[in-house]
Length: 196
Image 1 (cartoon, rainbow, N blue to C red):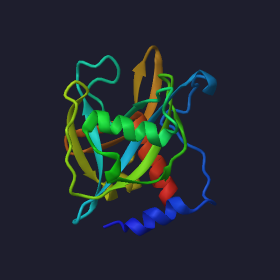
Image 2: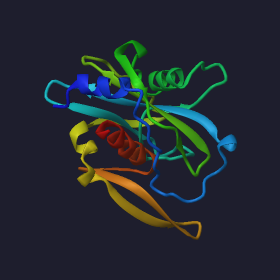
Image 3: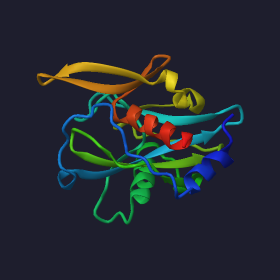
Image 4: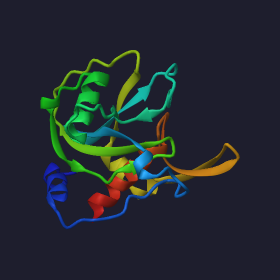
């Protein structure tokens, strides 16, 4: 099992700097045009092994329907920080109370082609905890072993045609789940952050 103390130490270090990498290094909107958003990267400290909690979005949503993601969403004007946004959105989406999350720190902002500047906030979650997913937004909540997600051998590069262009992206398939795009990219950046 990955030692939680090592995770805490890694995020406590102030001398670790790296540039966020994206699955597709192509043109993105200017930073000033991006909508701020935050997600929680919830590392669950299970007794057997640490896992990461994900949601699968419902298929009827307008944006990113059916995709696997971290809990989170766009910032509201009254949110004082990205951490607050991530915790608020996580509670709204899956019912995980902020008191159950030990915040470790942030990864670098992840700029998406769809116009968001996402701040990934990493936190530890210690069981037991109860979830109550919002059935309108969340179809399923599940966990994947952290060690699997951090293994570079499981980080794949895929591509597909979209609007006349070939788009490249990271993917981390696990069992019947296909984790890809920004979510997989943030996991690749988490691995890079922890390996420093």
